[in-house]
Length: 337
Image 1 (cartoon, rainbow, N blue to C red):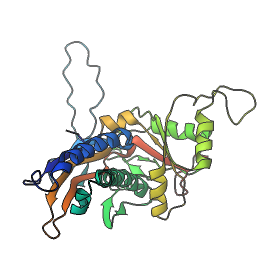
Image 2: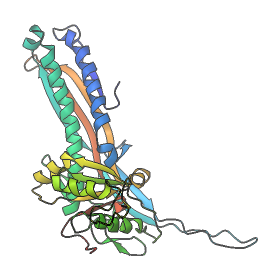
Image 3: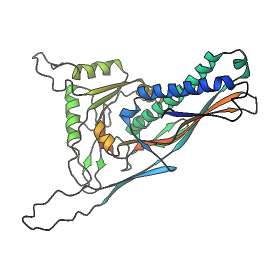
Image 4: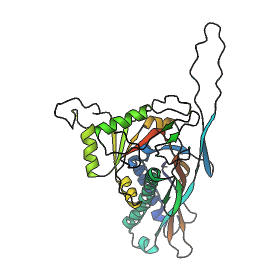
């Protein structure tokens, strides 16, 4: 059984005209699901959590104070925790289906049946990929984004858009940015990385954020800039052969889905993102929660006697703590020049 999809065959189908295609198609769907999951970029952009309710609430507490030197026989200090920001992420139901006609079975056209099964899995995987990119891209421009005709939240727990230049700490009120202006360069990369490394938590405590991933849309000029900046052991913009401190330090994701979603949203920006993968996985950064993984049911459609394969899933996604990620090359961002 695949962890990506489960398949069930309705009663009476095995003994029907569709019987011989049930097990081959079910097995094919599960294998295609496993293959898509292996290739998915989503695992680098979200932390996957199970969900048991219509929505999940993510809450935080402020950090513990530093240890205090108390001397011999000194008493234990007590830290008073304060409630941090809260974020509720709702689950949404997604559905799609395909049909196998009696004519396909009569003509033993298993190839056409498998093509439709593959397209169902591809459509589901593509939907998840696009949904994730829509939330990130939407978080550059506001607190909600339209996807599939419905509105989804793309703010952080502080109520601001995921990417904003005035995120305020809950306790000390310090304002911090994760949105920056300026085209990609090795210099700007170093400056944004430094800003992220100095990010503090709600109490003003240093969080030791350490970005390790550069994520970009599939744009030729931006790809050239990124690979020139981080893929050579010498400084690309100088002739003095100085050592390139960015060389070999970054994972790079070039993402056609990100390109597509920006285009669908009518945006011409070519943003780049820096992510701390460990901070995202260990904390509540970007959350993808699965209430019900994809279930594909094979049933007889009573309206036309076709064999209907119906896919249904429930999931949600969103952002809690904004500190794991920063976006650059956005005109409304903070100027580091």
